[in-house]
Length: 112
Image (cartoon, rainbow, N blue to C red; front, side, top):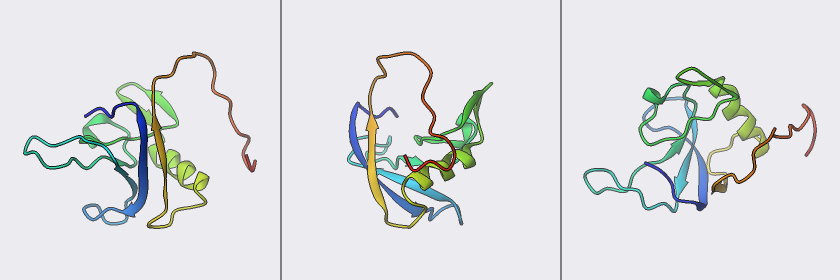
């Protein structure tokens, strides 16, 4: 599944299928499963593609076959939202990156 460019709502939740897993659910998409049901697109920790089924697994860096430190990446995302709290919502912006270059990093402890 690939999300079209656009703005989507995400909502924090605890996984009903994986006890203790903190994740975001993506709303506002039109992706359907093979059976015609609306697909569940989630953002959760996953270091390898085989740990994902139409979901997004963030990482802090790339490694062969996947990403590094996905749990740490999720915690950093939750921190941007003020910490993990079930029901917290935000925006996910999907788009094409048109510039290439190093990403700026916010120093640890910064309030930016």
